[in-house]
Structures are given as structure tokens and as C-alpha cells.
Length: 184
Image 1 (cartoon, rainbow, N blue to C red):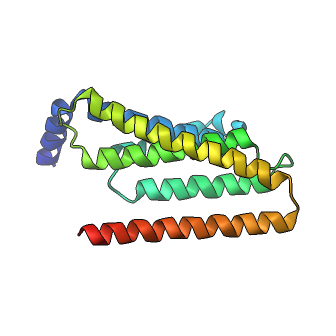
Image 2: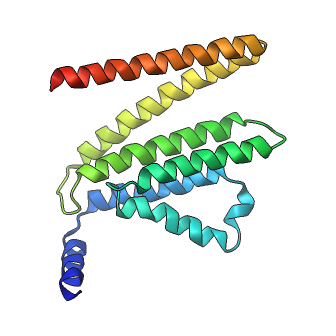
Image 3: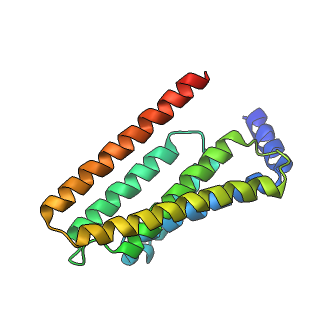
């Protein structure tokens, strides 16, 4: 037990600013995602402490399964809340949720590869965030365009659009898999 406490103290004392900022950003992104996914009443009262604890877990252990489980739980929660809502899907909440989940995911990947005592130039973090922002912006523009197109048609148009989107997603995943396999 004493050895574990010494290792933890050494790890905390050797931590540098950039890895710490990445982990704080993971926490903030997950908390924001929960804010977009769940009703505001959940953030008042005793449940807010539980949400804060759950949001801090991936920041502390980004390599574990906690990140994936939390993303899935937030998405399932959003679907459940949206299904019960009389307002339906609100575009601003959907865009905020997808943006915060993507940022949480990509920052967790960075934190998993970045030791807590690494000395990192701020340009590296800036480039990482700029790439993530470009992906978020492109996805938001495409999403808004697709939602506006889908809103102008009937149920058959929505089905065709959903199937088309599924084909595109599977094709991109297969292409990326082929590129990774080819590189190895």
C-alpha cells in the first residue's frame, strides 16, 4: 500500500501542464455532453455530484473501457430523453452533443497516448484541437444540410437518406480498414 501511494505521489508531482489540460478538457467535454443529452433538471440537486464523478472517470483513466461505456450511456440517455420529449429532436442539442462527444473521444485518445509527465509543445495540442474543430465543423455543415433535405420530403425520402448514409459510413469504415491493413 505504501508503494502504491509513493508511485501515485511521484506521478502527480511529475505531471506537466499540457497532459493535465487535456484531461481537464476530457472532463469538460463529457460534462457538456451530459448537459446536452439529459434534461436540465438532472443538474440540480444531488444527481449533479454523480454526474461530475462519472465525467471525471475517463479523464483519470482514458485508456480504459470507461470512455467507451460513458459515450454509449450518454447516447442511450439522449435517445431515451428525446423519445419521451414532445419537442422531438432539437438541432442545437444534437450538434452540441455530437461535438462534445467527438471532442471527448479524440482528447481521450490523445491522453491515452500522452504520458502525464510528457513535455509537449503547445503547437501540438493546438494542431490536434484544430483538426478536431475541422472535423466537427464539416460534420455540422453536412448534418444541417441533411436535416434540411430530410425535412422537405416524406417518410420514403428519409428511409432512402438513412440507407444512403449507412452505405457511406460502411464504405468509409471499410476503406479506412483497408488502408490500415495495407500500411502494416
